[in-house]
Length: 545
Image (cartoon, rainbow, N blue to C red; front, side, top):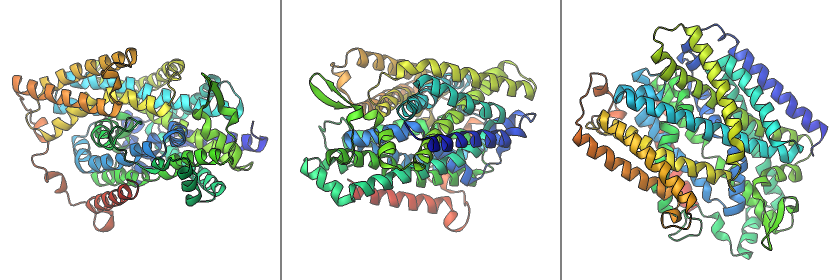
């Protein structure tokens, strides 16, 4: 249990965020739908970048990346660093279409490029994935933290925090979400840096950590790229083949993420915001994953007591590593700083939930309600959005017991994404890069690909010892993507494309066309930023190969 001082700090933080969120969104209460859902399209690159990062980095990441660092070392840091390459792709190739098409949602973009059937399918999948991936899993991670720290009932604590978050999200719309997310990003990063420094200081430095790993024959825990046949199931080629499939869906085709870009002032702010988030994504390996690895070496050196999360299973001593992050907080930090870390963890939970609720309400309102009620007043659109957000929150709460069955939160999350993403990634990539990608082919690819993904997921969970069940989820994502590409290419020749005047403008005519836009001058130019970011990532992968 933590002290009254820490409880007070955490309580003050929650109330402050609630106040700021209500204040930021107060002006939107009687404003139009564009203002409520897209912040009037006035967002600038710093707030976009911070909000993108906050929506992505939730309590799931703080808890589960530390858990993965404890269990397998730096390996799962690939999910953070590979995201940088995808964010560069987002800034260079996807943002221009999204901005110039003037869409409010990504399903709306698919209708402009393909047809209504593709739009409807993506809208439905986006709502389901936002509820499961962005809301329910975040609630689960937050509940584990609050249970470990406060001894509270996991479900009750999550309900309370989520309701507080829902209040300012439902009242204030995207503007309230982005402003609070920007603050929460700073708090979250500050808290993560504090625990990283504390663990590093307790360990005595990098060399001491390496010495502990070397004594146990575990230096491979410092490697990001594993060889073929590695027991982790994530060899280097699985990462480079599978992550782009997952990453393009998540960063370039998921409404919860891309909605911040759709609210940008212009193309340059949207591109710079995405690249700013790319620079921020370098940090998690060092402040989320590495602390988990330090916790592992600290426990091996007898400097961290893990007995409270240790149990005996089939005669073997097993550490329940889901709780390692909160254990580090209570054992490595003094009173006062613990409250700051609790605030950081709550930041992750609240920012993820608020962003996803806003995205779900936007999709349902624009892609379903408005289409079947044309000419409806803005007030009714906003009211519908608020009702949808509340409903999504309730559904997410009911999913918690099911998702809690995963031993690793991070693996569970990405396992689900690996089976959802392939058909969506396929229709977006081919739609933007291939002139002949047709509307009928997109529709059949989404239907067949989604059915295939669900079928494979159910089969592999029912028969894990089968040949199919032995395929790592990263490679499975790549194989499913290849099947989807085959389906879309074949059906595009069976049902040739018939471009409209609008869809003819929504694919690149040549590989260099995306770079024709001049952009800002100097270091802020999107081409310069992209080159710098790419160079940094190549160096980092060489150092941690």
